[in-house]
Image (cartoon, rainbow, N blue to C red; front, side, top):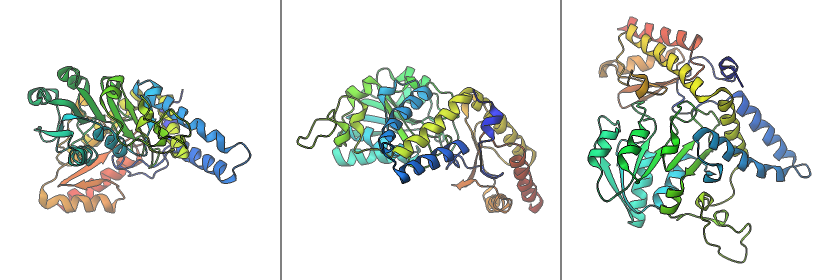
Length: 371
């Protein structure tokens, strides 16, 4: 086991980084894994290249531990968007989703509908982008085959009750984009039929990392439309066009980036050594500290304050005529954050303490003084 303090020591970024919702700087563990694997590949000593083939199983085992899905129902994907494209292009029927979802979800749904005309988007009316079980229950139709939702909304920071949604949709497919919660939310992933995520945000595994996990029900109802030679049961089908395998491997096109698999596995293993519940509790304390600072300086927080409705994102909405001043104050003090649509998103992690909070206080002080 790893202590929380030991885990925090693996954060290499400078104080003031509050943008994990965009990308998480690679951890010391992941960086060492990446450098070590690259060194092996660059030297290619006798027998060393074949060892890269073991990274796939290592990643599947790590994802299985993180999500509760069996390892043989997990497959590597280069990112969340590719995994969701695989799913949506294989679906038939209505898919209920919010138009306010991150574009990975909406674009995959729309492109599949436009190209194949087998899927029909059903646009969910939400409460300012928040998807709740009640809204899903009230707007589901007999033609709805699946519901797609983000585990954590990237704009509002809202933590979706996927267990509640499962209870109201019956045996329809539940598709979850988990990227804004993987590694920092102890979620009941097993209630979903499809979980897609990348590892470049809270897992801090870098770009080019992702996975797709599918239940047996999903595998029975989603066609592997974009299935390459690695998606068949034949190891090297040179002389035949083998059909897709019945399994999640069917949703692959070619051989994966083995070093990316190793990076992602290393990031997930590092989290598992601490425990997601411990990390989530520590982040909750950091979120409280950020909200307290915002209240102290009278900066409006529009994301939820309820622990059960939030993950690691705090959204600020200053008056429109003060947005530039706030973003300038943050920038001038070395705060990395996301400004979008009139709001400022601060996304925190275990290392958001001490120096980072001091820098944030200094930025808020400058903002208040200028006012």
